[in-house]
Amino acid sequence: MARPLIAEIDLDALRHNYRLACECSPLSRSVAVIKADAYGHGAVACARALEDIAPAFAVACIEEAVALREAGITAPIVLLEGIFSVDELPQVDALGLWMAVHSDWQVDALLGQRLSRPVPVWLKVDSGMHRLGFSPERAETVWQRLAAAPEQACDLHLMSHFATADLVDGSYFKRQLAQLESLSERLGAPLCLANSPATLAHPEAHGAWNRPGVMLYGSDPLEMPNALTSQLLPVMTLRSAIIAVRELPAGEPVGYGGRWVTPRPSRIGVVAAGYGDGYDRHAVDGTPVLVAGQRTVIAGKVSMDMLTVDITDIPEADIGSEVVLWGRSANGEVLSVDEVARHCDTISYTLLTGVLPRVPRRYHGAS
Ligand SMILES: *Cc1c(COP(=O)(O)O)cnc(C)c1O
Image (cartoon, rainbow, N blue to C red):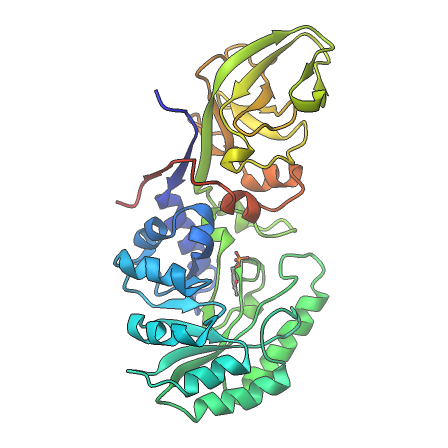
């Protein structure tokens, strides 16, 4: 028997979530964001599962695009940060990629390159995130420059990223959107703005294209409750099993540093999963897990290859019992990765992208 830890990926759930992104924005097209190996789910498998319903994919860098092309993915692929060096441009051309441009040197490189066909370009505007992009004033000039070079750049869109679309307080979001709307009006430019939170909660920000990412994997990106997010399905189930059981009297410390001490005579389940698999070491005592389909909690610090859970109140739990770290258990019980993330003082994104190669991925659905 192999070590029981696996990451099970439900490709039907991925398709369901992608369709939900499309349904809440019927006038937009949705580029499926599958950067960072599809947030840890496997970019090639996810692209294949979405190929017949998603008109385009988005990645962070050319290496990610190359891997998709080599796997036979023929759909348009957008480089969300464009190129990182001029020598990537021949590959952009050869692979038929689309690119964001956020800096003058990228525009200079594009306009100076001999190309077999013009590159579809998303001009990145800094409307308030203050990370990448041209200021709205500069963007106007750059847009005109690109528009005057139809042999080099085509299908121009304005792209921008929201800093606070997930928050209840919408004031900064509104300020960003207002800037973009006025710029888009002046240029007659189609927009590509919405990430997952804006796709779900801000229809006023839906453009010609949206860019949903984390919602495709079933994570709720919003601070506020929303009827749509309750329809998202978890895509990854991080599943393991109990490999040993300890019966301890009250007052016994468990694990490194003895952080957790048995408050009563306790049964402790030892689970094959640790930070060496990507399970967050910041998980506090009380972080939820499902054992045999029932909720219980982590008791003691996470080790590299193991963690310990309190199974005192689950008498049927024993060696071999199923443990779900997040996702869906065999009996249908769901533990959301968002809830686990809150106990680790982080967000679902880091937990999902953090599942390490040691954990085998097993795919089902969408065949
Ligand atoms: C990652 C990313 C997205 C997707 O964001 P989510 O919050 O995962 O929906 C959208 N746009 C850009 C530019 C990104 O880098």
